[in-house]
Image (cartoon, rainbow, N blue to C red):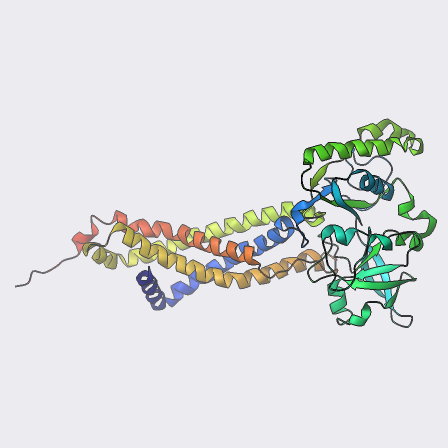
Length: 443
């Protein structure tokens, strides 16, 4: 194999134009495929950056935003958003959850300023239950995170800042923790900063939260008409960590009974139409390792189509390169004939051709990583900046280990694909090519 590799490098040095054409074609084809796979991996396949995401389960199998009033939901009665009272009912009656957290479906615009003299900036905020960070197993970068004691009616108003906001807006100033902030005109104390890479429990095209504040604080900020005070004000996603042991199907059925019991206790509050439909309402328990996968729900069809299209482009490139390799092989027919005449085996000839094609594919794949990085950045720009969303979306164009392994695998497969046909040409010529080579007898 080493001898074949050295020979392949010599042949490529002798034909720089051919090598450059193949490498550039492969870099574009593999780079486009890798760029789409980078987005597929982060949006559709990646779990939340939290402790043991496989233990998380979500109540509700739909993605809904952002406020649903009433005791019925959707045409099929499939509940996915819940009121504060419904959340408390689940939490108090389902010991199968070690923790069950609630988070606002969507973000709230917050006018934030540090101190009384600073300029007010607009940030993304999200109301969460006090056990939100504990449920996800998140530890603070500095300071502390929210607890159940912070999510009480008369508790002091506190906020948790994201690492990115702390780094980019406040220069990683440790004095931020414990400082007083005005948030929508109310005094809050920032108690801690989340670790790097944590973006919450939802990957959304509308951006990640800059501040997390308690659900109870909404009562202070909005007054008597706040959503937590309305039993039919459905605006919370529910995400819990299930204890080892319970059967998911059995827990799903239990949650459905609990939800019907809660609805039955509010029949007197229902509208006439709701009284006829409330018994048809249902809930479903689904894996929550990816959190509330709003971006996956929005973009999965488009990403699948793009991945298929990129794969087709790569296959076309492989076909064109196979033709190019065939033409090159026909040009070197005399050399191949000599090798056959000297006793080169079928395996030896095929291996030599495949080593050269796989080498070209790996070089093209290495350059394809740079193309993939640029392509991913371009797609993110077109999807969010041009589309009008200027919020930070936590999707990185940098290739991760799964993406690098994907690139390596697709490069090797590509090399085999466009190298297979040319590699078998010597086999078909084996019986007739040696006859064209003349050897003179010594006198």
